[in-house]
Length: 398
Ligand SMILES: *Cc1c(COP(=O)(O)O)cnc(C)c1O
Ligand SMILES: [Zn+2]
Image 1: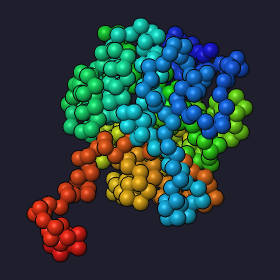
Image 2 (image 1 turned 180 degrees about the vertical axis):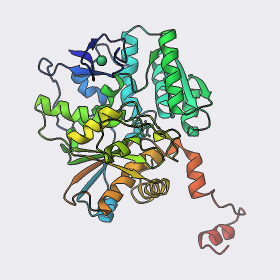
Image 3 (image 1 turned 90 degrees about the vertical axis):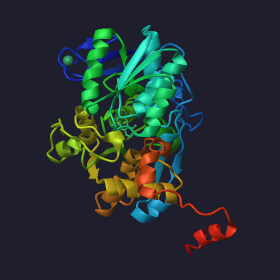
Image 4 (image 1 turned 30 degrees about the vertical axis):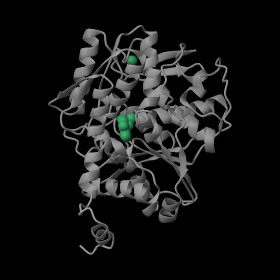
């Protein structure tokens, strides 16, 4: 049904591996010639597991109803940018509130197939929230390493309540990832970071769902941190073309935060790998990553589709977050808003054509990061418990 191959040297490995001896990442290659695709791109019954025939697992999935997220038409954003069609895919409406659930349903199912008892990850927050949730469903133990003080409160709350052992390290995400890889190797825990080759397989269903609902758009715009998602979505669209279900590829367009933009630098210099950023910093904690694991795959996806990589400032991110929430009714966390902030910037500069159909993937839910909201919106006004005081407040007399 599939094989697991090194993306650098092509060597084949068994399911229970993450990287090749040459250091390259492993990638699932579905044997598309042999697979009997048992779904139609007819817009019906869209969920991750509609596409099981293209997912590399055999057993019944560990599922919490992931995928099938809304694809909204963003008319005010169209007006503002002058771009003909803009859709927003709200991945914040997955079970744990981010797209990570698509990867985790596949990753935790694979952990079951491999007979693992415990799973682990390093996380900027959403991976841990999602992993803890799916581990709970599967009855497995979960261990999470977080960069201390740098994870949005809602995400820590989820990991804790779903029963994971949560360990905050005095370092950044890149440190946490390095350590958890060593711990997994030593203790035989199943590693569910995006070096895990099965997680992107779940995430590629974002591409399938978009194609299922509106066909292949001209461009897909999304925030990029570790760059697993942009690589996965590219792979999803590529497979649809190879099977013959679709004919074109969208221009893959990655948006990074100014203070954490190694892939942008590489793109501007036309390189196919990154120079890591030492101390990444941005309000968008989910993409606060200096040494993205999937950088090479992501750059290939961008070059191959004549896509773009752009950067946005924290102010632009917050402005886009507010616009989405207050003008489109779409509540997302800061990292997610980067996709829209980037689209606005590219449109304003005339880097993309007004005739395009663009899908912006917004990756996580507003509720994830209430502390940032209070910081940028302020606390609610507080008044006496009387109608007069309330009216005064409404008419802003005080
Ligand atoms: C994980 C995450 C990202 C970044 O995805 P990568 O695959 O690491 O590039 C962006 N936004 C949110 C909300 C996330 O949870
Ligand atoms: Zn190799």
